[in-house]
Length: 410
Image (tube, rainbow, N blue to C red; front, top):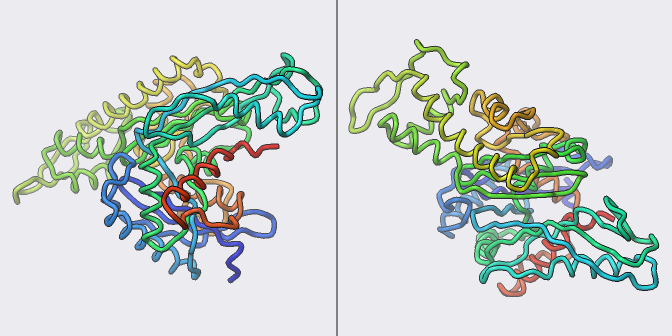
């Protein structure tokens, strides 16, 4: 099998590390041909805290995916997340030289908008153009070649901890693979689960993982806001462990098998068996009790994001509503609960627009992994793998690549 049309995404998550391998067809469509998913113990809230544990899990996930696909992967597109990720909007203004907008004018405008102070230890990860404004004319996507004297640009800027990205690179390199790109995870998930129409009309993606829950808001096919909440599936599991007096490993099983967040979907006489601690026999618990615990945590997450959307005045632009993906979206009734809180249409986001192992990867838990693979296939293999060389040079190359993401739209 040709290797130049094979692409891989690596979702390095808090609870799982997922490798997805895809084959790009002649019509630019993507078939998923390999999937490897193993438990992760080397991360906390999306950040690497144990290099050795992370490396071991990466190797196992890639080996599983390679065995299924029948190919060997040498480079991947990796995801980044965590509470260290911050974002804000900025505007840059320049005078147009020669009265005709050139590519250099566009670059100067974006550089002007990017001239912001970031906290010590952080770097700018994304500079994502939202719109250009030429002599007062708004909503311009590509101003090159247009006549004018004053060019403005609105951009969305994402910053993240340098150390977090370096540890992802180091883990991948020690696992024997190169990194072509590092992508903010909710933007990767957006590639897999959002349609172009939704991004144009206005949509909010909520991606619930094990350690964090991430949000991205789109309007007119541009990113208008991103946010990361350091609450995820692990918090649901701990709540159940405490509330039901059962080990976390058993609480996780109960959550996956019986988890529901909408009381209308459970009856008062439903009971489930819950293992006890210390060798005691299992106990029968009313399922509404389980639902109350999970619903309370879900409401907390959605209320926080509702407050964020209201504070940024973004709720009114969500013509296509809310899309919930990731592990949290597998909880029964999640779309009904979200709709009652946000008061907009809500759907569960599953990977779409792909072929191959669709019956396996259409699960929302694989949204980030599939999105990373789609992103890699769109960008193509890089001439020089960025995870080779000294740490300083490696990260410089990563940042250079990051700063061009989603800005290459003209």
